[in-house]
Image (cartoon, rainbow, N blue to C red; front, side, top):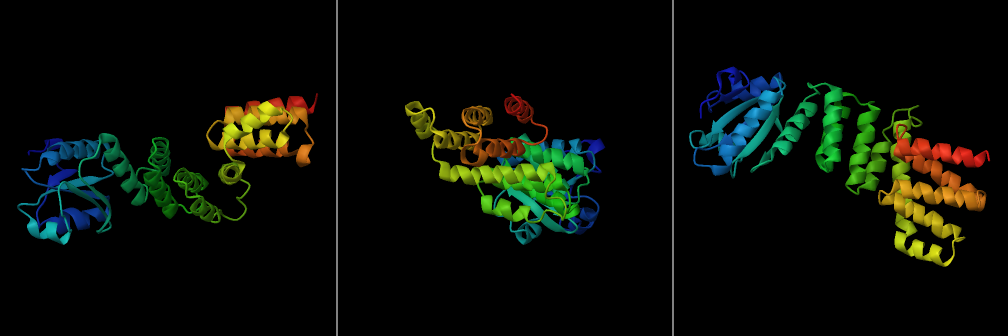
Amino acid sequence: MDLPVENTDLIKDTTEETFMQDVVEASNEVPVIVDFWAPWCGPCKSLGPALEAAVTKAGGKVKMVKIDVDKNQQIASQMQVKSIPSVFAFYEGKPIDGFQGSQSPAQIDQFIERIIAQSGGNAGLEEALEAAEQMLTAGEARDAAQTFAAILGEEAENLTALAGLVRSHIALDELEQAKTFLEAVPEGKNDDPIITSVRAQIELLEAAADAGEADQHRQALDADPDNHQARLDLSIALAASGEEEAAVDELLELFRRDREWNDAAAKTQLFKLFDSLGPTSKLAHSGRRRLSSMIFL
């Protein structure tokens, strides 16, 4: 499989004799992806070119070497390659990540963004943060958590990465782990809006565990529209299921009916929900305006 001339500095074939130079030593500068393949391997024929394209697109932030396992059985054995394709990422002389089998182009891109971040953010923190956010949005919460953690390894007080790590564990239903990471907030930063937001998200989810299902609260409200506890519990259940706008509506209705009920529970819950949505949320802004107009009527 001949490689394009313009890629020879980024992508090359290597052997057991040149493995130290091409992988271990080279990985002291940028991550090196090692693709174990063989000419008879069907999945290798699609994965290899996809990896090459992604490495080329990364523009020098990673390199790639290809190792034919039939011709280099000793190094394949040392790396405990049991099946192919097998891919490892090296940085500073040691493997830091890897996978086996076919991967989609999106998964390959995520893999490369992740190892760039783990190697110290050669892509830049902003780019790594953006990649992690995209992983989280795409439902790849575990990969997002690893990337956010790698960013924190380089910049321990990066609140965006810390909040992202917490949100990743929230998405994985690992609330206790998420709360543990919140304990790492630097001194004096607990009131930062991005930290307030993730803390409120955890509190809402914990409250939802005791609030019950939304349908049962709707039934209770159908029977008695002045059942304030049912309306409060309904708002909590709605927020936990991602129906934040409906939750805001129910809380505003509760505030309209009895703003002082249960030590102004409606207003307290509204502020917590607004915090969880974050400082840039249009829903939070509109909800605050609606609440203010009701307060000053």
